Image (cartoon, rainbow, N blue to C red):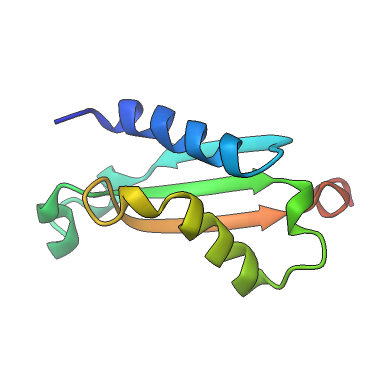
Length: 94
């Protein structure tokens, strides 16, 4: 089984292929959920902060759907839970 750091590298690659990423940070928060029922499956808990121009004009729900689509192959084996903070370049500087 790959480590969560290896998984993060794969997540980053998929997100960078789907979006023109200007900022990307993926944190492994699995340790905060130790003993959680979902953790037993091996999937991790991650927090994603992403800034990309593709989110312009998209609702929060649409942004999340686009991110889930980009990371779809990682659910549920590598990712059990994902916290998402997605913004446009103008939102990240304001």
